[in-house]
Amino acid sequence: MKTVEMPKMGDTMEEGKILRWLKKEGETVKKGEPIAEVETDKVNIEIESFSSGVLRKILVKEGDSAPIGASIAFVGTADEPLPGEKASPSSVSTSRANGKNTASAQAITASKPAVAPAIESASESKNATGGRIFISPLARHLAEEYQLDYSRIKGTGPNGRIIKLDIEIALAAQQASKAATQPTPAPVLPVTPTTPVAPVAAITPEQETIPVAAAVSSTDDVVEIPLTAMRRTIAKRLSQSMQSAPHFYVTSVIDTSKLAALRQQINEYAAKDPQPVKISFNDLIVKAVARALVRIPEVNVSFAEDRILQKKQVNVGVAVALEQGLIVPVVRNADKLGVLELARETRRLAELARQGKLKPEDFSGGTFTVSNLGMFDVESFTAVINPPESAILAIGSITPTPVVVDGQVVVRDRMKVTLSSDHRAIDGAIAARFLQEVKRLLEEPFGLLV
Image (tube, rainbow, N blue to C red; front, side, top):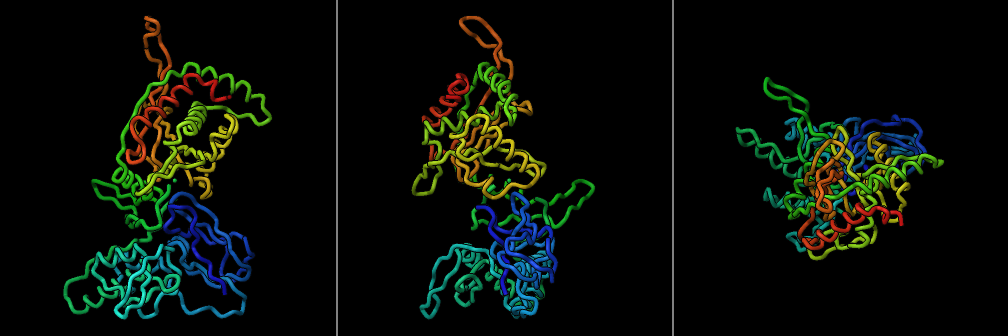
């Protein structure tokens, strides 16, 4: 009997929600065949079966969520006996979120869950007898926060590791015991509800999920709208970015007259191409950023507490606004792509994003991000850095502006750009040099083609 587990589809994924099962119990499944559609924090994606056989048992129902690594189904032969009864992690969380955590905790404690919980990095400790205890940092933090002696807990993670779910179950059992002797109701545990949510970045596996409203509700004054998985990720990541990374901002004004002329020439040429594509100003900006990152690699970095990681690849993220929120597809090796190639790749990624068909590799691994609000008639703005990157460039609209040239007042098309940088990794002078290089490339754009 083979176990189908919730796969990790992206660096930021903590859990997935089963949108629909593509196979029913009792149906034949082939290795590599899509078996279910899963919603992550960024996209909806089909997961494949890693073995052939019969879908014997579905453990996580449609609309329920499960952490990465959790068992969601069994695949085996038609007459193969099922393992002992398994408890869906999502059903446990849902029952707790509905205020029924006391009863569910007792049931779980009695039957002990056999799911494979989220994969978490392990740390070691010792129990009373001197034996080693393997416990994930997230589980340890939760246990210490609630002063729980985890040395007596038997872990259900890999190699007996104690993981977050084990601590939550122990806390629920402890709460149930207190509730039996105290007349006052027990407080609600800090567990993650698994409310079904609708379908952009990046959260480390050790980060918690922000609780969301159980359902859309309204009063005379407000309408409560549950957070989507994407919106929860945005809230989490950007809050952490602003709290942990000391942002500073450098703004420059760029004359786009020559850039507009070059764009027109390229589009006239591209219209006759076997694969015609229309070049946008943003395509040329992304190309200029990629070139500048090669020439000033000190900006193409990530801060890693005791060191700075300078990236060898130039992977530029291009922010795309969707109804659900913001997602940042990544143009890989943007410095090595010609302008037409870059434009085609940007269009492909943007279209996949709007269709909700991006793959994990399409939105991970970025080293720098470009965010353009110029099409919304925004003169200028400052953007929040997309971790683990250390900088992001905010692009404003191109507007006719009176300027003085050779002592004469003339009207030129100008564009404001603002670079947000993480001061832990990038100094002001480096940020200024980088922005100066971007400006030079855009004001003398022929350099983008050679």
